[in-house]
Amino acid sequence: MLDYLDESGQLDDTIVVVCSANATGADRSQDGPSGDSEFLAGWRWAFRTPYNMRRQCSLGGSVTSPLIISWPREMREVAGGVRDQYHHAVDLVPTILDCAAIDPPRLIKGKAQAPMQGVSMRYTFTAPEAPSVRRTQRYEMPGARAIYHDGWKAVTGRSVTPGRRNGTAGAWELYHTDTDRAEVDNLAARYPQKVAELSSLWRAAADCAVSLAHDEQEVPELPARSRPQLPDRRAS
Image 1: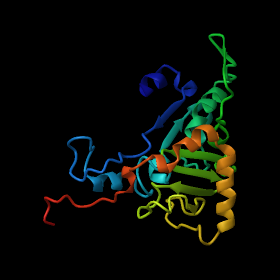
Image 2: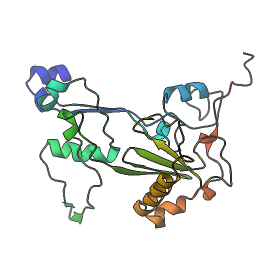
Image 3: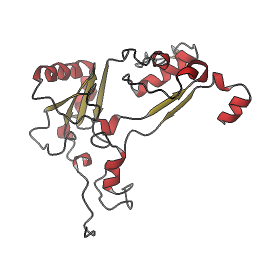
Image 4: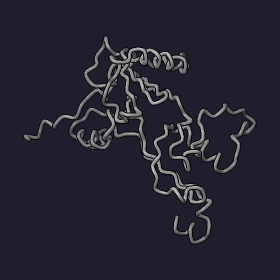
């Protein structure tokens, strides 16, 4: 298809977006790929490397996805580059609309549309060192919450680092994602004020009527707490 667009002179005006699923499955089966298991637990963990945890939590192994954007007319001189600005999936549509010089619709079939929450990523195409326009993003899964703000990320819930059990589910973990993208070094004990700042920011950003209904106490079991183990039938 890209060859045809190039030969027909349309490639310069074509924006290509490639993105994969956010993570591997979080089922507890060690034997896979039978039943609900996609594949062996060890492979599920390997596929999310270097990030921590799998789906159904709010750590990087659950919410981080690769993204490739190509637009020859504007990106020809920077093709193949890598961008480190922080963005979210809600920014995809605003980016496409920005590139196409289209304003977000206010009405669709006579119904008023809520303002888009995303921001355009177009500025990153030719400015690899530009600061991130998106500064804050709230995450939530049943029993798990997180918030990113200016290079820091706080995570809480029953599906944070394995080993947490009832009674400690409300504790927050803290990661400086600017320097620890894989979210390995929990800095909560070192920077309690930053934890308090981000946890307050999460509540301020949340629609409490909906978000707090997903309290971890309502989720009796989350499979993301399991770590990969060898199947019982293996001897080595």
